[in-house]
Image (cartoon, rainbow, N blue to C red; front, side, top):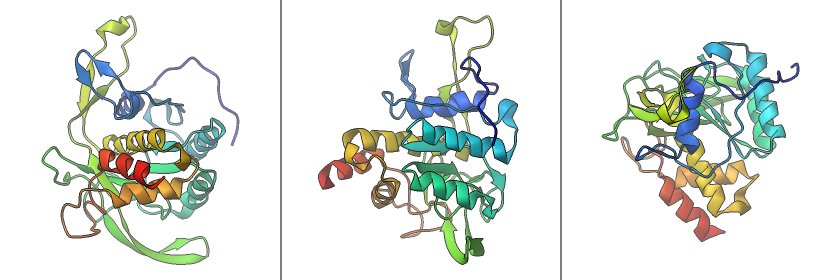
Length: 254
């Protein structure tokens, strides 16, 4: 996989800063942008300039495990199902790290990996009226290979806000930090960090769940707001994220 390349902390594209801001951004000029403002973030630059290789992504996943992270946000991926994601997603999860990944932006009947991996927590996007964004992916994957098995299952697992999400963007060179601005973006990439941030909140009030990604997953999926068809469907998954209910439930059962 190679070794990490040391460099000062920076973002070569606006995407990473924006998603990180949604996870843990603080109040900026009177606007709260982060789900879990006290969370600690370890950011791996695996797609410099917005592009790169599968090997770079897997190396970033391994690096994240080495940082003792509890959740990894993957606002990235490729179109369609590819079993190439199976092993890294499973290994990361068995290492005690919840893999949260965007489901893709090609609309109903489509999905992308790693969000559509069986073990990953795939996230679709909703708009401010709690409907599913038209671009948000979702489908039933039929007879896909997963190690020695052939599985049929539905994605996404849940949905979260992904339309006109206001968050941080990098400060342009030569600009003072206090002059930084916010930007509103659309995408399932904007939805996934809401779930990662909610996971951080849940673990902060229920530290006994740290290292238990399956337990965290169960609570997140059991406390959603069920919109659309009753139960699970291809648009919302089980429903829209409810971070407060998830945290309250975690406290009540531990």
